[in-house]
Every structure is written in C-alpha cells, then in structure tokens.
Image (cartoon, rainbow over all chains, first blue to last red):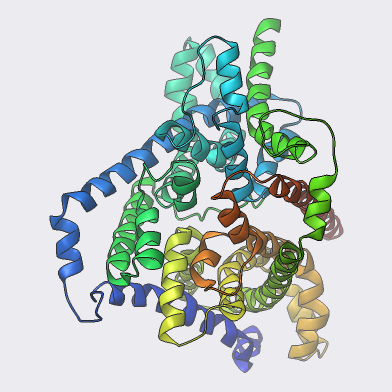
Length: 277
Length: 269
C-alpha cells in the first residue's frame, strides 16, 4: 500500500520519456505512413501504392532485395553456427567471444572502406588470385563482393545469439543421445540443432532485417548493381526528393520487418553492438 | 582426438583472421608511403600529419564527439528516468506495451528511422543541422539505456526502498541516495552504449544532417565514394584506438558491476 502511494505521488520524472515515445517513436512512423499517401506535388493519392504494385521494376527490386538478404543471412549462418559451436568448446569461451565481437565496435564505414582497397583492381585479393594462377578478376562492384562484405559485417551479430543458446545446452542431453546409440549426425540434427533453434532464429532476425536496408554497402561495394529496399528509400528521399514514393517503400520495408519478426517469433531487439547479452 | 582438436582450432583461427584482416590491413596502410592500398612502400607518419593538419576533419571530429557526449548524457538521463517509470507501472499490460514501444527503434532498420525522422523534422519545421542530428541521436540511444538500466532496477527489489521510506526519506532522497547509487553500473553501461551508438551512426545522421553539418561517418562515406585516400586510413588507426579504449572501459564497468552484484548477494545470503 505504502509502495503504491509512493509511486502515485510523483510521475513528473516520467514525462520526458513519455514525450520521447510520443514524438520519436509513434509520431515518425505515423508520419511515414501518412506521407506515403502523397505524391511529389503534395496531393493526396493512392498512386504510390498503385505504382508500386503495378510496376515490375519495384516488385523485382523487392524480390531481389529479399533474395540478397536471404543469401547474406544464409552465408552468415553457415559461417557462424560452427564458429559458435566451436567457441563453446574452447577453454576460455568468454574471451574468444569478446574477440569475435570486438570488430562491431569499429565504425561500419571504415570496414566497408577497407574492402574498397582489398577488392580493387590491383588490390591484395587480386594479387592473391594472380599468385595462385587464376589471374586478376573484377571483384569490386560485383554482387559477390556485396554479399561477402555484408556477411563479414553481420557475422558477430549471428554468432552471439547462437553462442548464447549453445552455451545453455546441457551436456547431459548430448551424452544421453550418444549413450542411446545416436551417431554424431543424429545427435546434431535431432538434439543439438532443435535445442539451439531459438538462437538461430534470433540470429536470422538480427541479420535479415538490416540486410534489407544496407544502402551504403550497395553504393560503396555493390556499385549500385544491387538495389535493396534501403537503397531505394535513400534514393527517393535524398536524390529524387519523391518522399511519397520513398515512404511507400518504407511502409513495405516495415511490413517485411513485421513478417520476419513474426516468422522468427522473437521480440528480443538486436543491439547494434555486441556485449549487451 | 588430437587431430580433431587441431581442426577446430584452425576453423576458429580462420574466422578470426577474416574478421580482423581488413581492420589490420587498413591500419598497416595508414603507415605506407604512396597513395594506394596495393603495395606497401615503406614507413611514414605523413598521413597522420596530413590528418592533424586537416582542420576541416578535426572540426568534424570535434562536432562528432560533442554530439556523442551531449546525446548520450541526455539519453542516459531520459532513459534512466524512463526505466524507473516502466518499473513503477503496476499493470502488466502497460509495462509490456511500454517495453514494446521502447524496442521499436531498436529493431527498425536505420533507413526507416532516418527517413521518418526527416519527415518529422520537416513537418515541425526544425532546421536540419546540429540540432536535428542531436535530437535523432538522443532518440535512438534512449531504448538501449532503458534496456541496460531496467535489469538493475528490477534486481534492487522493494525492501531497500521500503526501508529507506520507513526511515523517512523523501522522494528526492530516495532517488539520489538509494536508487541512483545502486543502479549506477547500469547507468554507466547505458551511457557507454549510447556513446558508441552515436559515434558509429551513419544512416540516420545521413538522412537528417542537411547541408551544413557533417559527422565523421558521413564524411568518411563521402570521401570513400571518391576512392582511396590514405588519410582515411590514418583516421581509422585513431578510431581503432578509440574503440579499443571504449571496449576496455566497457569491460571494466561490467567487471565492476558483476563483482558488485556478487558482493551484494554475499551480504544477503
């Protein structure tokens, strides 16, 4: 009773936070949806949605963006799962984990910039290709380099949730499975993987959503060959100044995000840095 | 058994090399003579000298730092008060709604945050520049502060507060002498995360920055679009050091807070 009294006595301190929710969480999203119903001349219209759903360019762009996000997520998952699994078996997993997460503290733009040097015509990657006899190739501004760099940036965000769920796995389950005669593969596919699925889902969610919107990578590394939803939004807002169409694509991106969150069933937010648990 | 052990270490090392090679590559070439990242031409400090002579870049660096410090201070204050408020809600529905709203900006793609903030600032006729960037950085840093502080508040329990209230502490004394000292490690972690969020942000800033004002990330982007410039490598060397300091700082705060937690548990148990 006394506790309740203490709480109701003053709520003034809660005002800034409530204002933040109203002004910076709810209002911008509503404004984005509102803006999507206006054309470039500021007239109310449904034309943006009609254009979007009738134009094969926009639909193909969306399919492409989802496809590339899928490839990036798949590549990241294939590298990260074994990493997380092996990490758990080392002597000092926390230290190794810290080392995996460290690169997320380096500015994203600098990491992208490094790959401009690595993948350039006479860069170290091409020197290596010449050395092993393949000869120099166009690496920068290709779809391959886009997927490679995106996966490189996302790996720590995939390793972290998977590692967390693997480290919670009780070794007794694995022992039981082996004692009952399961092969290594059966133990993995029937016991380990299903039990670590929540971590995998969290990782997919953490990687897939940002992959739909990485616009600086499509420009710096992908050479504008891959257009993601994010690139399209940036283009409409800052280059062609067609905010209505940009907002429409933004609404599509929000819908895609909600679908992914629904499919992966998690509401745990990804933090942009590691180390937040 | 022994060979399996080696294989697994090899894989981990390979992942490590891939993760760190680009960063090391950047820093190595910051010491290279010449203008490209293709062949190492001998050691020089000249790119660092260029960097320190580049008054435009230094001004941008200071602006970035100012934005980061101001925004994380304000975000920490608002976020901590918000976490206290969320903890004080009595109805579970209100609490989960508040938490869901809190997390919206954490899961939204940067592009959506940037675009919607741009519409928001334009609608309110807030000029784009320092002010709009600062407001955006405060806005996207608040949720992480709440997430770092809330567990600390929940860990505190009510008996401590009841005891203080029984001993006649008023609201302000309760906050300043009991609650804040207890949740200080959480506040520090929140401040740290807000700081790094702000220093690292590119996409949101890119949308709301307008013409006159830039931060380091945006500047690196526009320079990188023009190609290789070893001054950026020198900059990355310095930023790597800064990141290292931040990671070590964060690590010690966490160590402190976990020791603190153990000590408290020990006292209780």
